[in-house]
Amino acid sequence: MALVIILLLSWPSIIYASAPPTALDRWQVMLIGAAEEPGTAPPVSGNWKKANAGETLVELPPGAKGVWIRLQIPSTEDWHRPGILAGRMYGLNINVYKDGELLYETKRDFQVELSRLLLPVDSSPEKSKLDVLILTNGERAGFLAPVQLGEFDALDKSYIRTELPSLLLGASIVFLALLMSVCSIFLSKHQRNFWISLCIIALSTGLLIASYSPLPYLYYPSGGPIFLAMFELSLFTMFPALGYFVSETFERKSPRFHRFTRWQAYYSVFGVLSFLAYSLVGDRLYPFYSIVSVVAVGVLMLVQMVWISILSVSYWRRGDSQASVLSLGLLAFAGTSATDLILYYANDKGYVLFLWKLGFVAFILSLVIILARRISNDYKTLLSYSKQLELFNLSLERTEKLKIISDLAASVAHEVRNPLQVTRGFLQLLSKKDDQQSQGYITIAVNELDRAAEIITDFLTFAKPELEAISRLDIRELLEQLDLIMGPHASMHGGRLVIVSEEKMEIMGSASKLKQALINLIKNSVEAFREEGLIELSARAEGREVVLRIKDNGEGMDSEQLSKLGVPYFSTKSKGTGLGTMVTMRIIEVMNGSIIFQSQKGKGTEVTIRFPLVDQLAPSTVKLPH
Image 1 (cartoon, rainbow, N blue to C red):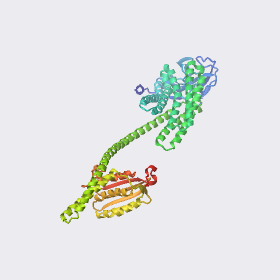
Image 2 (spheres, helix red, strand yellow):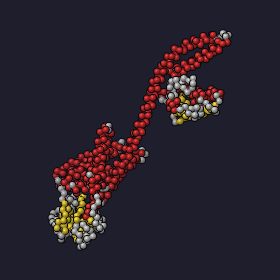
Image 3 (cartoon, rainbow, N blue to C red):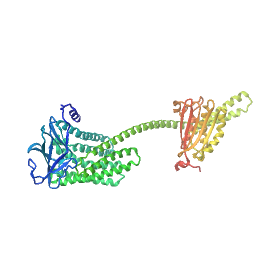
């Protein structure tokens, strides 16, 4: 429907060469008493007052039921089909006379003060005058703005173009609210309550904007009572819903505002009942209902909007970006609405509210921004959770495999170690013979048995990595001992070991096990040496952790090799079993630490190990020796 209206308005029409519109900004006003019969012409002895666009005289004193307005019309021969337009005026029943002859008549059986007068006039070179009779049972009657004199069709179109955007805006917001209400079925109960309050705000605001426009009343006069009921019910519904939305948005951190919102909801129920009574009884209740729906509601709205503005500013200052966007939207809506109300009462209710529409559009825009950012954040969170789940599944699969291997390793190690020791003993007895050839074979056999014993020891350490002697470990002291052990080993293979450590860093653990883990890692780096091999081992405190970094410039590993570290029987060495890395990772895990490998083929490997400082350990994780 909106598209059809826009196309009709933009459809090319016959254009006449005519003068531009002229503004008639001065007229005369005569009050009509409650007991007077207006007739078809103003009384000759009436008291005329001069009025203009700056002093409209639309406020009626007590006892007045309307006004006569006399317009002086200049020559109209410059227009093909002249007409006059009073686009902003107050009045219920309007009659226009020329020399006592009725030219125009409109009557309403519903109380809507805002109206419009669009009337064709004769094309004449002479001046003329029109008498406009305006009757009302309200408090205002008359012109709010200058009357336009010009081409009738152009005035009609210009008026529609001025009023149509508000009607389309209201209809669009109503459609959006209905769409949001359908989407609410997919939300949880807690989310649904919050979402429905937002739907009610959008629906009531859209209906307010649409029914506040004069166009529906002018072009569909039979639906006037329905449009009026929509406006009144939306007015009583919107502001309690807005108060609830704001209170929930700011997590009810203002109990007074929350109580005010509840009281406002009770008053809205009273207002709806008053409107129903007014609709049934008729104009006799209008003075009472006017106080309920205009004066009291206006004051409550003004208080609410000022309060929301204060809450928005205070919440904005907390620095939360999402809260800041929402607070800006609420502040724009509350600020423009409060400004409208202040201007309305400051101009003796002769001001037409319009700023609040712009404020609500800003409020909707802030919600759209928040929704877009939330969808983006939820998508990022979903990707993060997906990656974490994948890593968790891999870790779980690895843990299950390691548990099976651990149980198997413990069983095999205990069963195999005893016969190996017996065999080694007999070989040592045979080695006392003088046969030189046998001596060589026996030496090889003993060395292989020792290597088998080391592998079995690794199996046992991996299967049962208990820390038999737990104590406070000074990292700097332990690394100094490690330098004495592994420094010469690195030199023998043509490289250097450089150790740098901060002081006064202590962790809980086993010194022997930690040395074993670090020695395994340094050995791996030494075996990856190329020319001018270098191993850098640093230890420093970062936050609540001790961070050990072992970095070499060796062969490095590709991504596939890196992903298989810690997998049983995987090794980059020709005779490796992979148990050394597995044992290292289990030792660090038992000591409440973490280990991360980073490597690039041809550029070296960096190992990062983190342990909690001893003062940061929870009491249950610190097991001091007896």
